[in-house]
Image 1 (cartoon, rainbow, N blue to C red):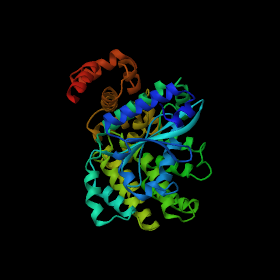
Image 2: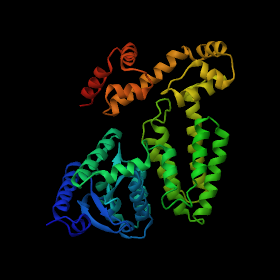
Image 3: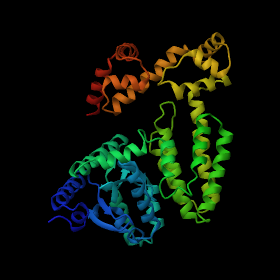
Image 4: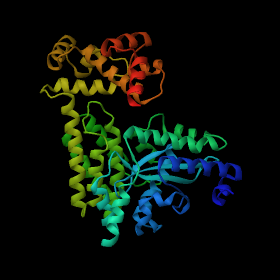
Length: 427
């Protein structure tokens, strides 16, 4: 007999039974617990709850706790995405939120997790212990349990989200609800899109939307001083919005931090170290902050590090013209772009700019553009199922034939063979 709650929501015992069996299989095979929540955050159904470390702590069992409040926020936000949304909980562990869409509306949401990204950090265990009153006799049991949590690589988490999506959507009558949510959200889940969408949800009157957009633009433009100033303004705004409540400020700052990291972590020119490592350090520091001053220092340090690394990793030289041109190129290289366009943008003579660029970068303007496009194509070939024609177009090449020629010249392989070799090595 299917679960009564799912049967009532889906109005079909058969669909409810299939959905329950599908999620049960997902949880059994991946080792990740799944919980179904109502829109208000009440637990309606659990799959393998004994695998969830959260269940061992009192804070998780309290419907109005800060912990549950963050889960509810993530679940609500995932309804706007129409797809799985990966986020960090208050203890710095990874989770995945996914809405149950029925007749064009969210009928609650699923949380898959928590699980570990790459490796469990001692800071996460300490966060759990600090958030709850744990006897010495229980501590070792908690530490031992944490060591059994499922661990996924960055690619593994992406695969996990695809798997869960396909465990839920095909069982429902139509995936139109999710597709509509995606369409409303936008073709790409970028920071700008995320912030604009947030105007439509319950944060519309409070979230520092414009300031966050200004912050990202300042970082991209290499304006480190302005980025620091905007960071301070965001913190001041959050203090007012949250009425000085430190935990509420942390929750909103975690959200802003996660979206900023997500926006820049995919940049090939931006060396954060391994993705996930810095994320966890920052998340833990934000969680552990004992005052607004500590929060401010952590957040502003993050923004300074992103701003400085973003500029220095692109160009270590001293020419302001070259630095500005590289920022322009990075924003436009997937479209048709000419040296004369940049020279006009910078108000300099094209011949002078060409010579200066080659001197400072050690390669011609054309070679630099092609290198960026080939690197973009490599990323798409490795991490998407896009066909070669679309990979070429998305990387800035005008046609597949020219793309294949340049790609082979730079890598020694055709795009198709490059993808096949990558998939073979990954097994």
